[in-house]
Length: 114
Image 1 (cartoon, rainbow, N blue to C red):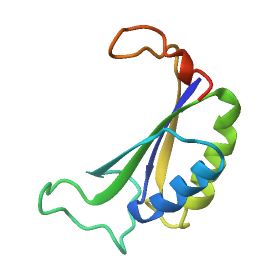
Image 2: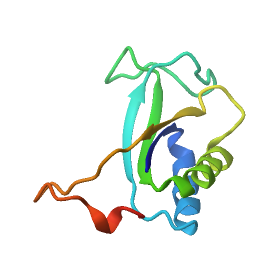
Image 3: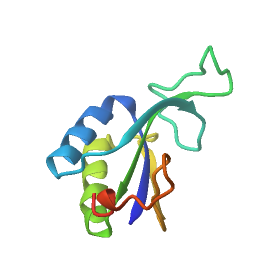
């Protein structure tokens, strides 16, 4: 299993999530945030009043997938998240060695193949 963390433009998130759902990706988490980075879109990114050091609104999508769904999910995030301008975001992929239930610490076998 792999975990994908994708930092994308908030306005691109609905398309990404809808296309992931069409591919059978049912379970994911989304966060709103602000950040800093090397690549910003000077047309849209300005310092935040809440966090003056921050200059970019971002959406963070997290999803754990079986290995066989990773490539297609990356393609979906890329195709639906890009604008061809600086600040489109970044994607991290990490190995997931285990999933356990919070309630019991038992292996989460029902989500093994998600």
